[in-house]
Amino acid sequence: QARHLFHYNIVLIGFMGSGKSTISDYLSTMFAMETVEMDQIISQREGMSISDIFAVYGEEYFRNLETSLLIEMQAKNNVVISCGGGTPMRDNNVVEMKKNGRVVLLTASPETIYHRVKDSHDRPLLENNKNVSFITELMEKRREKYEAAADVIIQTDGKNELEVCEELVQRL
Ligand code: S3P
Image (tube, rainbow, N blue to C red):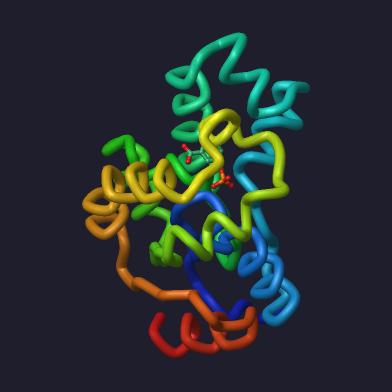
């Protein structure tokens, strides 16, 4: 039987484009961990894009799905959970993510974020707002909740995947 490196789950949080999906893929390869990409699972289960879920059912409905998924994942261990950027905005989601294991916040400057998201799609909140000043403003609004949810904070500007993962493993 395979021995798991972590007896808990790792929960990655952070702003859109902070590197959650990239780092969770990298961790899963490095440590043979299962990854749970929350947006992807929600989108698959609902049979529509994140933008369509927001447009048809609203943000509240989407946040409820996030809460359910975080609760569902508590039955697992050695899983890397990549949250949506807004998941920690709801206090109840923070309670449920903390039951999963260690919460790691990935951060980056608004300029770095802008470069990472500028060609991406299916991010309804950035649909008409893809610019550094909007990103800066939203990031400021979220900072306090992000930091309060985090057990570990890792700054990612100018670091590659390996460097971020090494720092993460050292500090867990
Ligand atoms: C959101 C971030 C998105 C997605 C949804 C809402 C947010 O996830 O969950 O569009 O509120 O910041 P990513 O961080 O993976 O882009």
